[in-house]
Length: 201
Image (tube, one colour):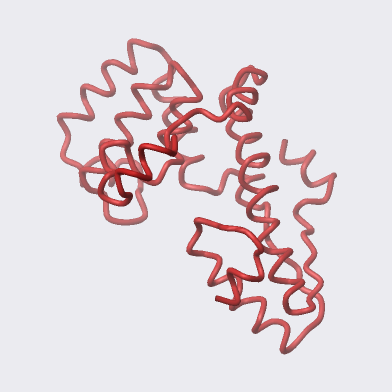
């Protein structure tokens, strides 16, 4: 309860509990901490970034995307998981996600949405009541994302910018800042130094 109260907002991220516990434990020993926030966003450390980078290079042409998605349908899920070095269990849902990413590479925003969403529209009724789904557009294309993908010429530049502007700034740094303040910590983010950002770009 204190973690939610400290955030002053709703966060759909289970990692808030780990972030909260980490800040609480650190505050018992120190008053200033260095955080690694921003490292994954700046240096393509997230799994969805790796998937999108590999897929955009391997399936660059429309013909390759059609052949690739057809070929992937024929392969067993565990084989695809080994091919892409998937870190966990790779089953039917993960296979579907990879096929959807490959099929939608012609529309980069759709490919990005397929890569970052936690579940598909078909799976949503398993997690949410119909009343909620009737009133909330879980699978819309927010205007902020549309603008980023319209402005960037390079698909990977758009992914880079989307992760920074829609995840790192409004979510990850907010969590860190709120929990640090809750326990009277000063949390610094050396990876978000301007020169480091320019280097990563």
